[in-house]
Image 1 (spheres, one colour):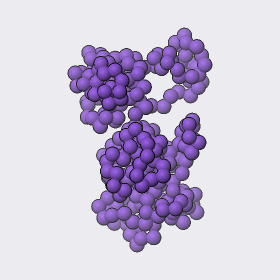
Image 2 (cartoon, one colour; image 1 turned 180 degrees about the horizontal axis):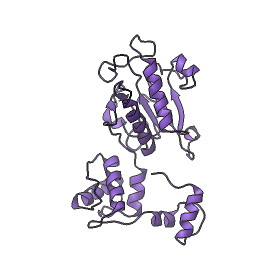
Image 3 (cartoon, rainbow, N blue to C red; image 1 turned 120 degrees about the vertical axis):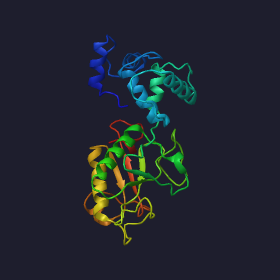
Image 4 (cartoon, one colour; image 1 turned 60 degrees about the horizontal axis):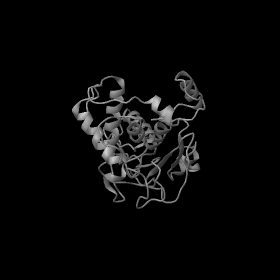
Length: 259
């Protein structure tokens, strides 16, 4: 969940009678998010249901009703996060929930591929990165050229991931190029030199990725010299057979992920 820009934060703080410093500290955070519990209803509960579904791989109905099932899901998440497990969604629960990495929705024209042996455990990424890629692959679906293979992204709480020198910050996602037979999800991974490599379709995919996240794609590493010459991708060793999408944010503690 992105925070407002500093001017927006200051306006919110002023409206709430808080110190107007543009910094989202404990008081501002507490004012931003309501405390909700079983029996409550409304848009805040809908937002909670959406977050729980995305961050815990659940299928709660997004109906705005804080049911017993929602309470159980909140309690389970609180235990998972190591915070007070009381089933009530207050500021600490909201903060941990919104900061938690997201799991992709594979109905967004994606298929799961695990070439490095890390399995489904390596599919997690920052919510913004996942949402931006999902939007791109949904748009790509309109071209009728098959699903997009989703490789490794990162682990649920970040950290080192075997086979990768990065993928630790939730903003790196690997995908595979498109094949001329549209069999990229079933017939195996190829390189840009392969006879079945579809440059035109892969170009459309790259364009969809950039269009879905304007100003928030730091790099797309893929060694097709034609796409490189067109300014769509960049060269990086060992990226002949997959595209490494690095998303970025306006503010990030690691300069490699700053837009």
